[in-house]
Every structure is written in C-alpha cells, then in structure tokens.
Image (cartoon, rainbow, N blue to C red; front, side, top):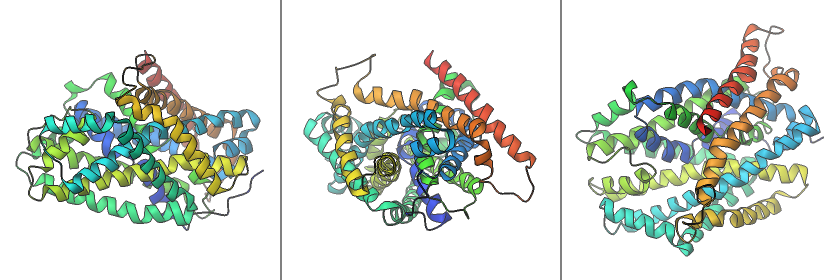
Length: 443
C-alpha cells in the first residue's frame, strides 16, 4: 500500500488556506451572488448557511479524515480503508475531477478575457453592449478555446510545483490578496446611494420568496462551493501530519469559505441595487451587469480590474484542487511522475473540454437531453456526481472504516458522546438529506 506522501503541507495554516482556496472558487464569487439574487436573497442564504454547518461540515470532515487515515488520494485511500470494491467507487472522484474542469476551465477562460478587457477598458459599458461583448467572446471558437488553454496552463503551472512550492505557496499569496480586493470593492459599493436595499435583500429574509427549488439549489451550491463529493478535500487530507486538528480545521474551512461567499454577495448585490440593475440577472450578473456598474463609478476601470482579478484568483485556487485529484491518482496508482501527470491530464482535459467551450457558439444547437455540452457537464457534476460522491464517502467513513476514522480525532477519553453524534451526522443525516433533496430535485 502507498505510504504517507512525502510532499506535505508545512502546517495547519497552509492546509486551511489551500482548502479555503479550493472551496472559494467561482462557486463563491460567481455563482453564489447570482443564485442568491435569483432565489430571493436571504430566502436562499438561510438554507445555504444551515446546510453549510451541517451537511457540508459533516462531509468535509469525513473526506479530510478519509484522506489522512487512508494515506492517499481517493482511489488509494478507499482501497486502504475499504478494499477493492471501494477503490472502484473511488474512480467516480477521478471522473468528477476531469468533468468539472471541462466546463470550469471555460469560465476561467472568460475571467482571463474580461480581466484583459478591463485593463484596456471596455469599449462601451451599457448592459446591451456588454451583453453583445459576452456573446462575441464566448461564441468565438478561437477566442474561447485560446482563453481556456491559457487558464489550464496557469492551473498546470501551480499544480506542477507540488504541494508546498505550488499549491500552498499559491494559496498563501492569493487568498489574502483575494480578501483585500473584495474588501475594497465592498466598501466602494456600500458607499453608493441605495446600496442598503441590496444589504437588506441579502440578509433580511422574506419567506414568501422561499421555494423548494431554493433548497435544492442551495444543496447543489454547497457541494459545488465546498468541493465535497469529488475527493479533492480527501486528497488534501492525505498530505496532513498527525499534529493537525481535523475537526477544528474543517470548521475553519467552512467558516472562512462562508464568509467569502457573504463578502461576494456584499460585493455584488448592493451595487446592483444602487445602480438600478436586476439582481435576478443570473450568470450574466458577473460578466454583463458588474462592468456596467463599474463604468458609473469614479475610477471604475481600476475597480473592474480588481474585480476580475478576484475572479481569476478564485477560479485558479479551486481548479488547482480539482486537478490535484487526478494528479495524485496518476502518481500513486499509475506510478507516473508529477510533471508527466500534469501534462497528460491537461492534454486530456483540453480535449474533453473543447465541446464545453464551443457550447456558446458552433455547438450551441447541439444538445443531449435538451442541454448543451457545457450545461450537461454542469448538471452531471452538481446534481448527480457530487451528491452521489458525498453519499459514498459518508457511508465509507461512518460504517465501513469508522474505527480508522474516529481515531484520527484524538481525545483524552476513550469514546466521548460527541463522536457518536458525529457518526450519526456523517453516516445517517448527511446521506439521507442528500438523497431526499437530490431525488426531489430530479423529479
């Protein structure tokens, strides 16, 4: 069996920052604000917070502990803890890593394009003109694929550096920078007249706007935002030493990630209300509405550059964690060196992801089950693969490897009551809740 990887985190801070970076991706910065805007603000936020500190916390702790106890990535750890059958189930995580990056890299490419447009200055900053610009950039095969290649290259450079010199170093620099950039944008937005209406929309619940769809979407975003169900947190857990408090670290990862999501909401929604924009604009809230808002601010070009720099940081730190799932698998299971694994994975992902990049242009009318390649990949991951992956890891942790799992949470007592409650949370509550919401959402 594989031993503990020698390439490990330098300490708890590096692990937490990298894990928060994995969670704080486009799910927090791009997806959370537009979903909160579309689903009634606080009516969406409340179930999202509750699910974060129950469902997400339980599954996150389970995955990190499985990685540390199993001493490897998702396939290796599952085999070490449960045997060949569980190793087979672990390949779902490998598939998720590839599929997520197939459409995630498209949005990452858009972030690079819009950062460039912000630097040179948007030609015309009306919503209509920006909508036309988004359509032009996303539908051009050459532009979309080139931007996607550029984004994947950045991800490959970071992952190629390994845990300490690549992922951890990147996270230590970029995560504090992301917080700083976001604070600047939040303060600027809140200084605008009418912005308080956006704050009330986000934090004062109007339960007449609550719907079961909001609950289903909140669960899907929990999986997407916190990177649970795929195995990337399990992979990060494999590089931990015995001194790291897994429960404390999991709590901090959830808390900091949720704070960033709330900051993203404060960064975008109050500014939308201040300038009379539509908070229910959906995905276009980021790429169409925000540049229009920046054009009305003094020094708006500077804020546009900062905003899209935030998106690049968020996209990069999260994409790195997804690629690491497959790199660790190739290094541990296939015995391929890390540099070669990075090149092979990126080439395969590029081939897989090109149809997603072309979904807004030449393949816009090519649909399966009524969905373009981009939409199909997103649906498969958020509504099927990640929830199923979360159920698998929870069942393995609570019922088939519990003796190896709970001993990773050392206590002075032999078996305190809180471990029994954690087992119920991970092994009963989380799978049941995921299954009910997932089935209801599909129906």
